[in-house]
Image (cartoon, rainbow, N blue to C red; front, top):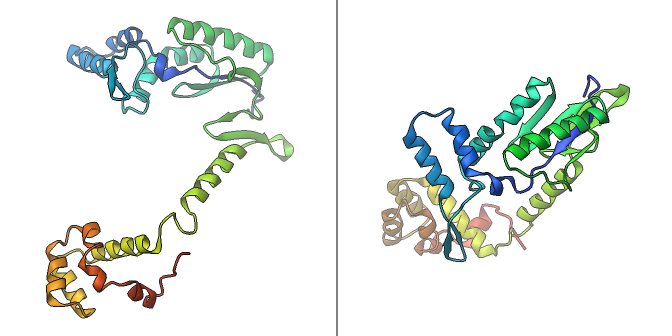
Length: 254
């Protein structure tokens, strides 16, 4: 961008992880992997069935989205597209199926788009026309970031406004004043945290006795010293009461 490549070829592939052709992908893997056992294992991973409403269906194309191998397999499949762009000296960035190529003019961008169409067609992948374009690099988001021109023409990047808005909305959802829990539920969590801090049964017994617990209560809690959450909803409530946390200064949530 600083060198004047301010037109971007912004390519989005339609349902990429659902459309990966197994035979083409396996062919690319066989060029690099000699062990037939590894190839069979990857083929089994690709063919693993999908559970939909309790019914298993076989997969004939695509890779499991969110699966640990899928991003790596995407790179293997799209590596030849990267090589084609590199061979022509293009400036580009790719993350999985999202690709941006930076060029100096709209006409150059149209040539690159034609090249990408041909490369993707060989891999039987389809471009999402609604989300793809050859246009100014300003205003196009990539992985939640946007580029902009600062004073003096220097190009900078920042988190896109929509990404910030989505992030704030998620934070508000997760940090509501009550946390979506009643006071009793909050206190129960505090009891579990305290038990975990005490860790050992001997420490639990000593601390509970110091707080005025009977020997039977202290022994019962200490006997289940590794079950913090289960312990927090038992006899310990007679010792670690809401009043106890009030005295510690824990604010009440309304």
